[in-house]
Length: 126
Image (tube, rainbow, N blue to C red; front, side):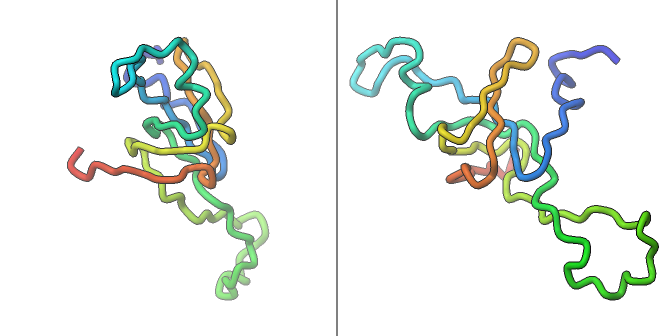
């Protein structure tokens, strides 16, 4: 399978309660018309970007109130998760200090725990 623009993120598996965010391209000009030098926007405490991939969520302990499954053997047990609120395509407002920057195939992304996501904007009609 060749990697193309459309499928380059399909092989990425995000673990746990983390999300992969592509930073929103910010304007180098302020509302008052001043031009900012490169890197100034990246140092802001709060950033925004689009969620590209989402982890499975928070794992639930195996003995978390599922007594009806006690007849199953140990190796049949599958991991269960509490899903995240974030979904692919959401615009996320997140804390920059908790984000880990990565470069994947020439693009900049951030891996952010859901606890660092302050707000989500979801366009239902997309």
